[in-house]
Image 1 (cartoon, rainbow, N blue to C red):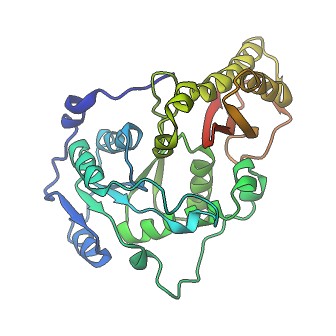
Image 2 (tube, rainbow, N blue to C red):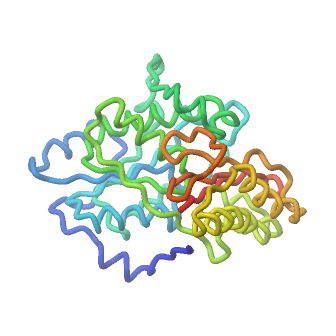
Length: 310
């Protein structure tokens, strides 16, 4: 289902009423002084981002407001630890001024945008590596070290910001599952909230990397959502009849859509997996809440997306 935000008016209805003046800081020490100065019963919500914000990010702020968080913190940090040596760290979109304006309008109270050296000192050598769950995921096989970088920076941001709740988008489904498992395994006192994917009119999941798409590529990029929908609908038809669906049949339904689109230049994976561990499934039982995910290249741009099989 497509989900659109209600625009500026909707965001303004959710603006903060906290007794914290809107603050932008690049200093961990300044943020922590603000955090320690909050009353003990203040509920803090965290929206961690890498910037280049779009409506999907801002929907997380609205979710934090709707949940009744007293103070909402938005972080903007392009995390070098989750980029491989041949990936796009140097050219990843950066737009801090507009990001700050968007976060303020959506209802964030404090924006923390630390420099790289504050997050990773020169002698940094400690990482959080989710071995076990990562070994079973399709995305990890394509991006070695990615989830180690994600878990490390999320742990650091939790330690720094001290939130009660943290908000992530379902668009990064494997990342959500890994963060949930990390929090449970390490007894972190943070409630992880997963919010629906926000999509463009043609179903393309909103992503900062969509800016890389050339006009012709963008015109065809909705194929990713259409392909996943074919797999989901196959599962739903079988589930309605009370029968399980072979995972390979779901993958084939998705691949057939890709094969009919010349702009799809590479199908990296089509995964049908357990929604918690992301271990690949052979059969998807009705009501199993599996996850159908994919990574493909449309033209030269790598796109990921996923749908819950429900």
